[in-house]
Image (cartoon, rainbow, N blue to C red):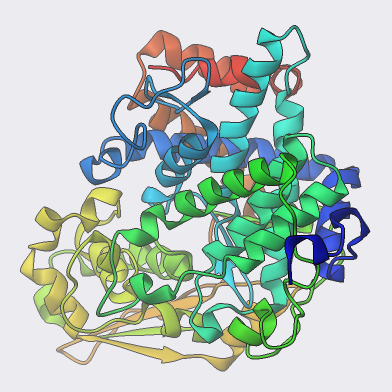
Length: 482
């Protein structure tokens, strides 16, 4: 077929799911005040976690222009640095920082993921667009616009995740980041329905990364930059679409060649509920420690048990961890753990550390901390079993629990109580307890990068919601220039 034989782009009717995503992104009016308030906390927590990640050389080595010298004065800033980059590479930088420590938000459903990953795209484009508009005498984007796009990206990724399990076919959840980021990026760049649909269709056609790098024996640091890669690709596809690049009407449903037949075993992709603000309202925060979310409650149990086992590690005969099916599939690991990426996705490691130290920090996953021989001694004494009710409650839309229980048995035949935790501190059911700690965590992380006066300026604006939402995006981003 020659180029002239293609159906004219404007006459295309796209797969309904693609059109639904475009309509929502462009036209949905978000009325949930709760969603906006949670989005404010997601924004701050994500930036703070990214700033903390700058302390780690393995993260910092990925940042900056794609090749030395390829900076863009007046482009998008990377928080905590002096980089000014074109928005594709800036999205990679910001996305990489946010996800490096796996220490902010999480969404658990048939597919897992971290919708805050989309902020790599949203913040990079928001800063770039605002600075470009102001230079031309036009109105910038405001932080209310950024929070709106954050809510919408969360919703697209999270609702797609409700019933479409990419992990069941070996694909990685960052593909849903690419879909959500592509939709909001095209809208932020001024695209209409045609351009958003075209961009999103190309994102589906890209296919998805394999989950190889998340599982033994190949667990590695790619899982920490994969989201940055997805958001940067989203910006690229959106820029192409608003420049007139064509889309593909049946990118999902085409027989033999569409995403569903090629990569999803012929099953139809579905939206698990109407798109609104459900995901942001129910998002999970990692607050007290950087542990893979299926292990958060297990770590809370271990911390509660720490006073009973400190100085008695040699007396422990066995440790029973009772959990849900998803945790067993993802983070139940035996044998050697080769790097931080391996350790921070091992349930047994994440339980052993608080039993030994009474805390769990990002540094505990590093090579030096892992040399403590007691860690593997405790891991060897652990048994992980599924509690079917925990697995059912995990999927129950009215509960969405992430339950774990830990009990320790000693050589003398005694044991601790069986400590159970169903909902981690970052769960919606514990918002009153959790949100103030999100702010404490943010301030602590900002202080790792900025002096006291600059930190105080950042906190004063960030916590004043009404002032924040009226602040131009580029002015907000300028606060984080080192």
